[in-house]
Length: 82
Ligand SMILES: [Ca+2]
Ligand SMILES: [Ca+2]
Image (cartoon, rainbow, N blue to C red; front, side, top):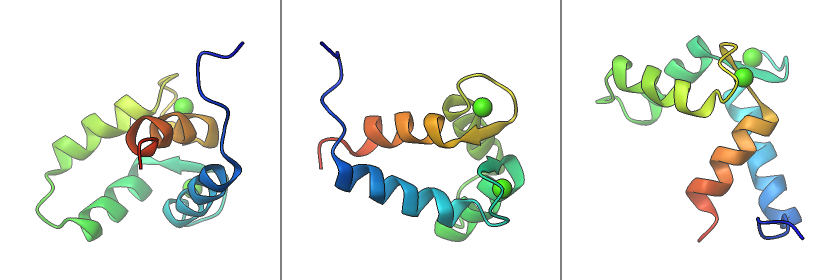
């Protein structure tokens, strides 16, 4: 069976809402400028270099965009316990 716990539909919906919030232009991908903009609003003390590192961690295939699958992976890692 799966190594991950089954996806909880509520968690997936939460992730979708968050993803839509990050994805300002609604093209289904979060690019670096969208990511930087949002994180610097959420926590103004965040350094851009740190944000870029975080972006690279989430962007699993390194194409410069975070798609929903990548976002969901990160979301699960970060928030699964809550
Ligand atoms: Ca976008
Ligand atoms: Ca990607």
